[in-house]
Each structure stands twice: as structure tokens, then as C-alpha cells.
Image (cartoon, rainbow, N blue to C red; front, side, top):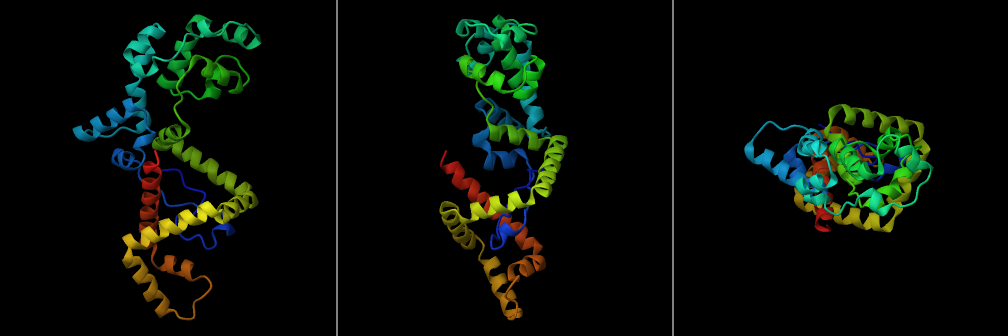
Length: 274
């Protein structure tokens, strides 16, 4: 499986504002998740991933593993039963205990599910079936996610987390292909907006400082790339403008390696801040 391509190139930012760019993808194996994305996973999923790794079983996708791990939730008849089976949901409240007023949305919801069962229903759909908030709203006959957001807060429904959801989608080949195509289509239709966005990011002081630090660390880890670049410069002394593009075109394997190392350093830095 592939990680969704980035809007920005992973190394050469000299002319990154001139065109939308996609970084190289990386396989989403469970080993990769353990090393780079483990902190995004709910604790129960961390244990499930480690169990697969240690048993050397054939790896399912992360999405399939999530659905299997939370499948017992779908068989629960009451919220108390679900909380007994999944203690991480013990803070979820019964909707009828915390929501007293009736309005148009609740009258619409109760055509599908009673207020007494709403908390368990939302828990099953969100965590057990991985339904999006939009899909659940449509299922309940509501106009959109805004109609459900405050209910989620009121009953203290744990969120999956945007980054974890993206990882789940990216681990599924069909979903990843679909989302990647949407990203590419959006970039093609909004070229100027992407260029301006990249330009603002590239000029941000915090981004500049971070890139400088990551680049310094990268050179420390990859002196052979720096040497290859020096050799290439000596071989092409008249090449000024477009030097980096020419170098990467001549050394695609090094460009891929640099992207990998830079990405890992960035992930390590973000992980250390958790």
C-alpha cells in the first residue's frame, strides 16, 4: 500500500513554489507504522499491530485489522455491554441522560434510532463500521456533519483522529487510489492556489528553520550524497541554473534515498514532541 503523495517535494525546495509536487510514496507495512506512525493508533490497535508483527502472520491492511478488532462492538446490545468489552469507551454517556431538549434534528434521528440507543448506535457506526460523520448523518436523515458534531461532544464520543483516519484510508488500496486521484485532480484544477500555498509555507520562518535543521541532520546521515553532488558539480562546472534538477535526474536513486531519510527525520522529530 502507498501513503498519499505530499503536496510538497521532500528535499529540493529551491524552486518548490513553481509547481505542485508529489513526494515519493512509502509502503505502509505494520513495521513502517510501528516505526513512524505508532503514536497515531488507539492503544487497542497498537496491541493488535504488535501481535501481527510478533506472530509473523500475513498482514491485513490496517483498515481490515481495525474492523476485525472492533467487530465485537457490533454485537453489543447495550452501551454498558460495549463499555465492559471496550473499557476505552467507559466515558461515553447515554444520549437520553445528557440531552433533554427536543428539536427538529432529534425528531428526525428518532425515526431511525431511539434516543436511548443513540450513543451505542453512534459508537458502532463510527468505531465498529468506520463510517464517516457525513455518512452517519445521511443515515439518520440529517443534512450534514454539523448536525452531529455537538452530539458527539455531549455524549463524549471518542474521535478516531484525523491522522489515524487518513492512515486507515491510505492502507486500503482502493481508497488510497481514489483519494490520490482526487488530490491530483484538485492540484491540477487549483494550480495557482497550490503554488501560492507552497510559497507561503516556504517563506515561513519556522518552516525555514526546521528545513535548515533537517537538512543539516540529513547531510550528517548521508555524507555520500553530499560527495556525489560535489563530484557532479565538478563534472559540470558551467551548470548553474537547474543544477539540482539535473543532479536528481542523473541520480534518481539518491533522490529517493534522500526523501526517505528526510521523511524519517521529520517523523522522528514529530514523534518526540508527543
